[in-house]
Length: 381
Image 1 (cartoon, one colour):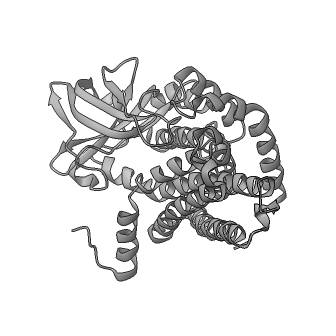
Image 2: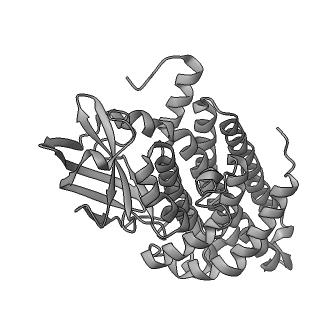
């Protein structure tokens, strides 16, 4: 691996970091304990998209910036340091745009793609259910044929962006062990949502979607009939790598806070940064962060080369999301009693980090993926 940034990457990252501090940080500050409201989300997506966050994966000929995954990852990691909530919002929206670009018919793309990339629309994907999270093939949401239409029934849970989404790519059963994707337009289709009150990442919408007989037609189908499960599974490698980038951003923010506090806070006649056990904690945090970065960018580099890389993506996700919990816990410890006070903000890093071992396969599911790839034996069945 080449660890040096290209000239273009260095220039883009420098401009992006300055933009984040100047224009994004003030706008996201009020949304640390409540999800970013829809009007603000539209504005932010329009801003970040100009730099390739929310638009980078879509080819230039179809309105995106056509960034490679490593470059996109650098931008997402920097954003997650400032706002992991907005990074997640952008990531989910970009994933929906990529699915539409890859699978949509010309009329669907003409109607929705440019508006998704401009931030005028917000997208999400709805796969998980109350009884089928990682066990995707056992989804129970279904499409029942009703003349020339279908009626969708079921419940989707743990859906990011659900409360603010204009477009929902929903996966439902259309036959025996057959699943298809439908594109739900909030203005056209009658579905309801409920926001979930959660531990952390409270600026990032997460909720339930209720399908109570939503009427769709073949015109609303996204991609070929019966390809919903296959297409859903294709995105997990990318999703695991990019959730890991959110973890990297949080850990970098926690390390920065801990270093600044250790230099400022004095005890026993000198800054606590000069005490051995404080340096030991900082050293552990930095080591875990560096090891996580190597694993995540290896996975992104492999994704850029194409092919299947389930093992490397699962290793990056399981290691990084577990490591960020240790890093943020140590940051609190460096602060001492001040670390548990909400006014200081460092405890929020810990709450945010704890959220990340769950989505796109829990740590345990990802370790089963690693075991399957290494041993050639599937422990899921």
